[in-house]
Length: 331
Ligand SMILES: Nc1ncnc2c1ncn2[C@@H]1O[C@H](COP(=O)(O)OP(=O)(O)O)[C@@H](O)[C@H]1O
Ligand code: SF4
Ligand SMILES: [Mg+2]
Image (cartoon, rainbow, N blue to C red; front, top):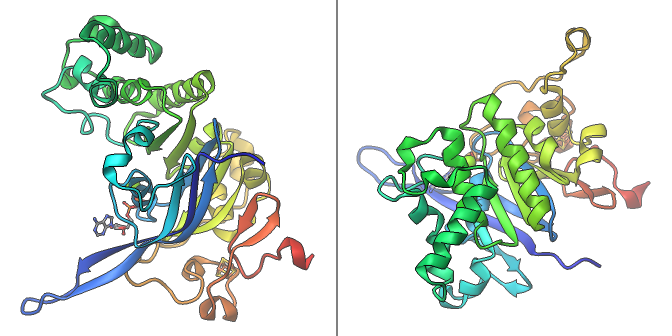
C-alpha cells in the first residue's frame, strides 16, 4: 500500500458572518467545507475543481494552517498536523509550499526578486552562507525560466507570467514534497496560462513534487492532474482518476462542468448537446436541504431534497455523492 503524503479526513471549516440589522449585531455560522476526505500520494497531482465560492481556497488554507478547522483531521508526512503545535511544525512545514492566484499581489513590492525567492531559505536554511543562498536563488530562477540578470529587480518590473514564475521559484527552492497551487493561472492571459502549466508539470516530474492544483476550469485541470476532485458548496461531488472522470463522469455536476468545455472542432462543437448549468450556486450560508446540488440538477427526485447523499464507491478510487449512482457493493 502506498504511503500518502497528505491525508485529510472529514475536514469541516466553519465561518461566522454578520447577519444582523442596524440595531442588532447577529452572527450566523456556515460550513465552507463539510466533511471532506481525500489524500495525496508522493509525486501525484490532484486537481481540485469547482465554481468560485465552493471552498477551494479555504481547503488549501486549512491544509497550511492559515485557517483553523472546525473538525476533522489532517495528517501530513505521517504526523497528526491538526493538533501539532506551531513550534514543532517547522521541519514538516518546509516540505509544504503555496503558490497563490494573484502573482503580483502575492509578492512583497518592497522586496527584490532575490529577497522574495530566498525567503524559505531565510526561514529553514539558516546554516547556509549568503553566497550559498544567492547561488540557490540563481539556480531556482534558471529552473523556472527567469534570467538571473533580473535578480535585483522589484516585482512591479515584471509581467504577470514572470511574477508567477518568481512565486514558483520561491515555492521550489527547498524542493518541497507538496506544492499547493491555488488558481495559479486564473489571473494570467490564456497564452501565458499554458506556459505556466507546462512549467509546473515539468517541475513536478523533474523534482518528484506532488501538487494540489486548484482551478475553477476543468480543461486546465485535465492537462496536469492524475486525479481530480470536484467540489460543490464545500462538499465533494466526485473524485476519480483523470481518465475516468473525463471519459465517464458520474455526478450530474461533473457532467455539466464537462459539457461546458468547448470542443476545438467547430462542426462537432456546433452539433453537440450541452448540459448547461442553470443559474448560480446557492449561498453556502443557506444551503439547500438534502443534496446541495439539487436546485440545479436535472436528475433531482424527491429523495434528493430530503436526504444528503453519502459518497459511494463506483470503482476503486472513484467516489461519487449522488442518490442515483449505485455503488460497487450494490451491483
Ligand atoms: N474569512 C472568511 N469569513 C467568512 N466567509 C468566508 C471567509 N473566507 C471565505 N469565505 C466564504 O466561504 C466560501 C468559500 O470561499 P473560498 O474558500 O474562498 O472559495 P473558492 O476559493 O472556491 O472561491 C465563500 O462563500 C466565501 O465567501
Ligand atoms: S443526489 Fe439528486 S440532486 Fe443530487 S446530484 Fe444526485 S440526482 Fe442530482
Ligand atoms: Mg479561491
